[in-house]
Image 1 (cartoon, rainbow, N blue to C red):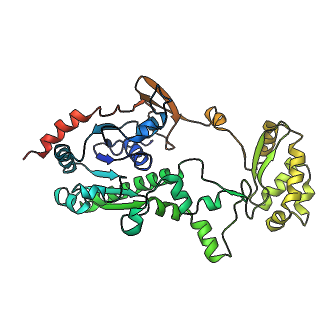
Image 2: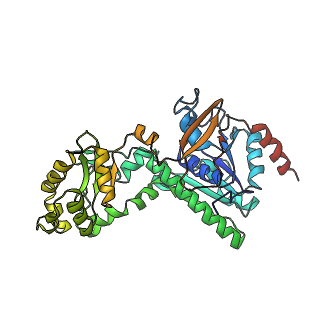
Image 3: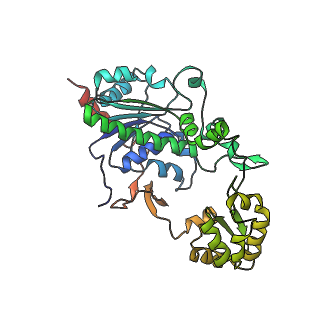
Length: 378
């Protein structure tokens, strides 16, 4: 069996924008939920991230395929009434608006619990919903910096951000997991849950390895680029054709295989400079010179073949263009406007790989208002 549409029959209202909540909504839609994306009349600003899909945003298509788009002016009493009507009967309210914005509409958890005891709410914020944290604006890059991600990323000379929206995606994934747990709990108790999730908390949790090193083992690791703070050989090595191979040797057994089967120098595994990992790391420059001398006499493809044959963990330093043509890459398809675009598939394999539609702005507004006007009536 494969995963299918386990959340079929569940409805999610998502007051979402940008990446974090939309990514959570994408995962919910992929699992079969009906995800109704509420947008202002100008649309989620992510619709303007790029114009690569026939003038529309390919990035927006990635995050919002399989959803419905409803335009509401939530300052308008009539539109707000439609939303309240929907919230009486749906299963999940997901949001990543500014802290307090949903409550100011009269849609705080306490108020919603009165009209829908089984409703699950999940509010995503930058730093938390109360106090000074609630006042601080947050974007992915800024939270990476605030939570220390940039301090451990980059080279010794220069900190860097992670090159993808790590904070947003990690938060969206965490929200998805929390909503699934809340759905299981509701199946047992019949009651909904109110989840508050901050991007900062997600990143702080993911920072526990360097945080614990700082607190309990003498200090956080320095930025080390493509090398490692205590493992060797570990890093990038240039081959004879200019290609780069990354190497990660984690045990003495692997180093013996590297020495004998790849480098042709089995005696290195017995050399006091290299016999144990602490010694290898202390003498990493000398070891790197030996490896580079060997790799520089071969093409990248030949080096990878030798490493694979010796069961040594390795990777090619690929560009995004290389990824686009990678033999391992699985593809998903989406239709946005008149264009069809290909993207990397979600990681969990499912039974079908149908092309999913990306909703035009407000495409489902009329149907939504008609449906939930009825739900509001006695």
